[in-house]
Image (cartoon, rainbow, N blue to C red; front, side, top):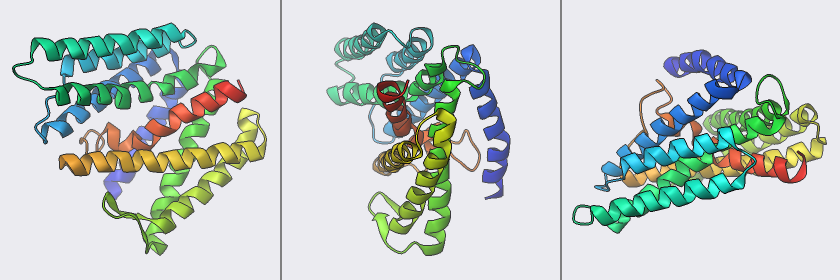
Length: 269
C-alpha cells in the first residue's frame, strides 16, 4: 500500500503537469503510453501462445496518436489510420501464413483498437479548447473525465473494503463488490454535479455524464480483468510500482475518454 501511495504522490503531479502543458509533450506521453500499453497487451497474449504482430501494431498506435495530435478535426485521417492498420496486419498474415494464423491477426487488430484508438481520445479531449495548452476548455473536460473516474475508483475501493458482501463479477474479478460499485457511483455523481460549473454545463448534466462515465469505467476495469484472467497474468506490467502496468492504471479511462469526448463534441463544444 505504501509503494502504491508513493507512486501516486510522484506520478499524479507529473501526469497533471503534462496535461496542463499540452502540445508535443502531451503527445509524447500519450504515444509512449500507447506503445507501452500495446507491449503489455502483446506480452499477455504470449502467455496463451498467440503471436501479436508487434511492428504493425506499434506503427498503428503511433499513427492514431499522430492523427489525434495533428488533425483532430479531420476525420479522413481516422479512416486512413484504420485502413493502414488493417492492411498492414493482414499483409503480415499473408506473408507469414506458414508461421502465423488468423487468430494472431484478429488479436492484433483488437489490440490496436483497444490500446491505440481508445487512448488517443485523451489528446482529442485536450484539443477541445483550441490551443491545447494551459487551463482551457479542453483541460477542463479532460480533468472532468479523470477526476470522475478516480473518485469512483477510490470510493469504490474503500466502500467495498468496508461493506462489500455481494460479488459484482465473481468469475472475472472476485474482489469487486456490488456495494463498492454503489459507493463509486454515488461519488462520481457528486463529482459530476459539482464539477459541471467548471466546464460550463448544468449540474444535472454533469451528474448524468458522470454516471455514464462511471458505468463505462466499471466495464473498462472488468474488460482488462477478463483479459488478464484469460491470459493467466496477474498484472499487465510492472512499470508503475504498486499499480502494475499502463493498462492496469488506465483500464477504466480507456472506456471513459471516448464517451466524454463524443458527448462534449455532440452536445456542448
